[in-house]
Length: 120
Image 1 (tube, rainbow, N blue to C red):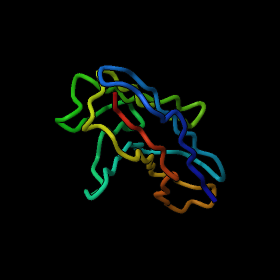
Image 2: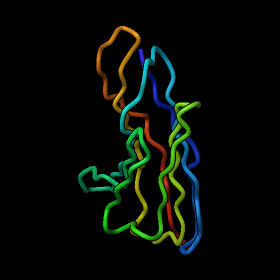
Image 3: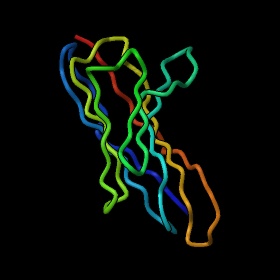
């Protein structure tokens, strides 16, 4: 019913930047909060950043001042601008959203993930 598709991952050197995008499609009536999570090898999935429909944001302490989350409600898309990347940012990044469908049901779909590798 609802799909999230991430893009923008890749290999970048320490100190570099990447911009991730996540587009939602399907039977969408409205979208509440949208967020980015990441999972590094051998670690649990963790919240990176979250943004409400009104634009309020919160970030993991480890990315504050380096990452910026934003959204385009007209395009049902959320972005994650990542600057000053560090090797410890290496992970698969996942998008998540709170979606009210056209059938007035509530879903929290996940994207398929996009790999970010920070290495020299």
